[in-house]
Image (cartoon, rainbow, N blue to C red; front, side):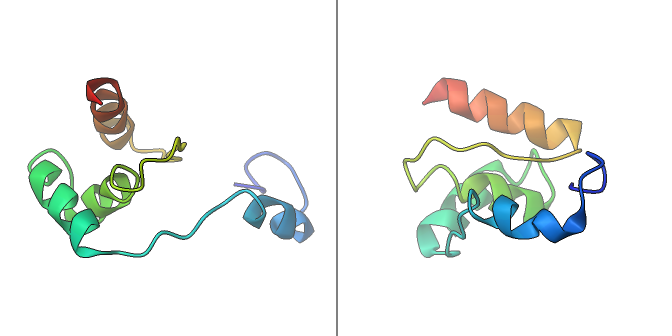
Length: 77
């Protein structure tokens, strides 16, 4: 992402300051299982990891289907 934006890779620590790691729990897997018909398994886990947390989050992806499903799920909640 830094290279794509024309920024030096040495700024990775600034990027990591705003990212959060979310554990893959049973809740995450249950949500991912419910949306896997719409996405590939790993993409479903990625999107599914946001919903159980109850946090506002931004999902970053070049995959238009993944962004569309994430947006759709966000408006349902």
